[in-house]
Length: 453
Image (cartoon, rainbow, N blue to C red; front, side):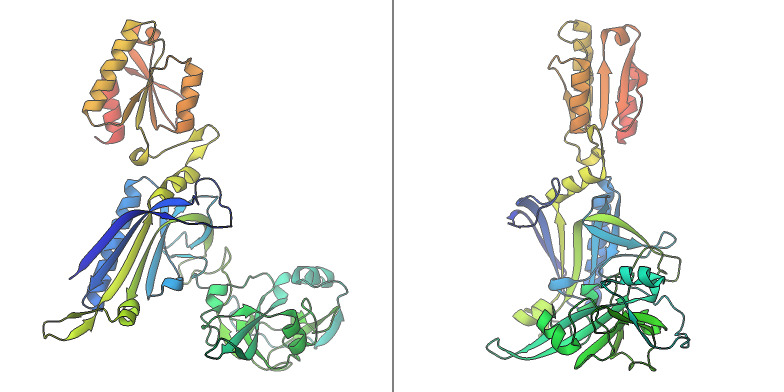
């Protein structure tokens, strides 16, 4: 050891939920790898080596990407990073600090408390009519208060099961986040008592414990409920919440005076743009991304379960330290297209373009000079190892150019009778707004420079 085994194979999925473009075909190609080490230190080196290799891969592909700290999810383990290609249509939200190296996906990004300390109560607890207003936004608008003064209630339940899967006991939980924030279910699942899995409470369970239907729920007067407050909510004073009665809310609510301190205070919300960065180096921004790779440090989670051991130098069995790593090979193509396209079609990065250069001879079927020049250029580029395509279809220039812009070939060289008489050809990169005229003898050198040959 260390040992690293990998395979690249075709896989299949059959999902109900639709996906845009090329992102979720039912058939796809995946690269999977697994590392095996003798101790934690060596496993950390294997993880770091694979992480660095993935960075080099995506940089070589010419993709704009971020490596972000991620939740380990169902796979488990202690350390995980996702590789996200930046795209406005991305499925995932990436949280990052523009002035530091901090980056994480929305599921893992830490939300710091937004208040320095809890203020002293300044308002009396008041039951306030809010007819027909069941959301924090509507209540805030009705009362003329900022949404940040309201508290949102979400009710979860956990079930204790016997060996036959029959529910023996149910615990109801009330999770509180500020009115302008959203619950992060992944973070909630890390709260002690919710780690074994939870579900949203039924209407019947809510009515039993709160004496009210959803929409007007709050922590005051709830029976047999464990209260989990987000870090920011735990520091709020004079806040607004449901009164556990239809068409009523409570204003001027304060911890300690009007209700007991929460059972648990935890980070249970999604961060929002402008939140302070957990590293203290600025504020957070959010952008969309498409996951194309993931690395996990698994430790001994699976080797312990399967009793997968090796014999050390003393002949004693020890559990293998494991890591697993994946790249969505075909997914990279879809992500590249989502990241890099315009109204005319695809704009491929050079490294993964099906063809790097296309030669478009205008009137080659009518001019021997054009045909000879195109063939010569094609041969020279081919000899250099360039993926070059010669369009000998005899199409009109407009149709020819439109086809290759749609397909997304990064570099185009156009030859015509008029230009060749002046000793020139036209070059245009897929992202260029205008053509560049080059001497016939300089075009190969120009392309070599662009392609770094």
